[in-house]
Every structure is written in C-alpha cells, then in structure tokens.
Image (cartoon, rainbow, N blue to C red; front, side):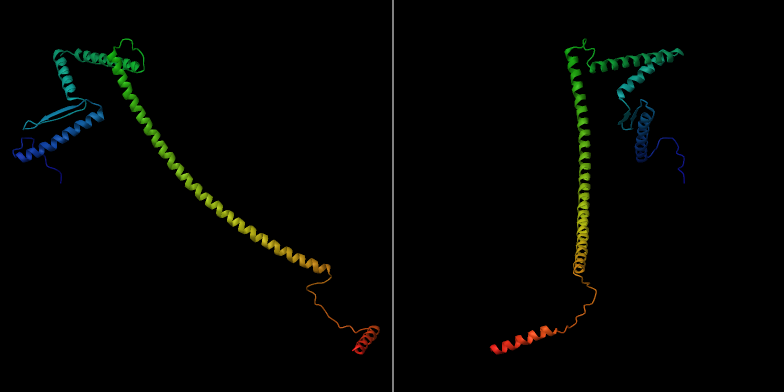
Length: 238
C-alpha cells in the first residue's frame, strides 16, 4: 500500500515532531549537497530547530554565501529596472576577468617571471608555496616509482620461477636423450659383434649353420707297419 497523504500542519506530539524534524532535516541537507555537486551550484542551507540549535550546509563557505546573498538582494533592491540584470552580469564578467588576470599573474610568478614588484615577504611566501608544491610532486613521484619497483620485482619473481621450471624440463629431456643414446649404442655393438663372428667363420670356410660330419679314416699300410715296429721296440727296451 502506498503512503497516505500527510497534512502539512504543525505536529502536536513532541516526540513525533522531533523524529520528523530529524528525518526531514537530514534529507534536506543531503539534497542540498547533491544539488551543489550535480549542478555545480553554490548552495547554502541553514536550519534552526525549535530549541534554537543550528544545522547548516554550505558548498563553499556559509559566510561567503550569506555575503553574496545580501549583496545581490541589495543590488536588486537598488536596480528594479530591467537593465539591472545586464549590469549585474557585466559586473560578474568584470570580476571574473580580474580573477583570471590574478591567476595568470600568480602562474607567471610561480614560473619565476615578473618578480620585480614583489617585496621580501611576498618572495618568501612564493618560495614557501613552491617548496610545498615541490614536496607534493616528489612525494607523488616516489610513490609511483615505489609501485613500479614492486611490480617489476613481482614480474622478476614470476619469470625466475618460470625459468626454474624450464630448466627442470630441459634437464629431464637431456636425461631421456642420454638414455636413448645408450640404448642405440648398445644395439649397434651387438649387431657389430654378430657381424664379426659371421665374417671370421666365413673366412675359415665354416658355416655355423651347416652340420659337421666327422668320419673315421683308416690308417694307411706304411703308417701301420711303422706303428707296429715302434710298439715292438718299446717292449724290448722294457
């Protein structure tokens, strides 16, 4: 169900009145802040409670906003004719031109130019501003360099770890290569030994795969007689 329409009149109950004041005051100050940020407007809000307590918000300065308000109200009161708005904007343009001129002059002085008209105190203040600016620049520079060094160290650590992993892989590959070379060398030695045996037996006229036939030869008659004579001579000596 939607909220009912609230009658805009004084709340009689003091507790409800205080709760409503607190909620609506916070909402009003929040809206004023959002308006100043979103629309680049100069906003000032002042709220006094029933007990006399002050609550305020100012996008720049409450004092400057009040002074600007009083000035504009006085100008509008003095210049009720239609040309008042034109004159107001002319003065605003002149004021902005003067501010721009001051900023440009300040920039030139910070750059070391047009210092002839400055007193010793002015030069001292200018030097202090430059020192403060230089400290801020150095601090920011050191922070950026520190962050870059940390990032480079992190990358170095990561690359070093990758290098270690690659070295391990190369070492394992070399071991595998050595094992394969040993296996190939052993197989070649066996083949060479088998080839040498076949060549030697071939030169001798033998074939390892051919069966050998052994035949008993009968002694010839001359050899037989000589053998019998030797046996007989031996018996005589005994």
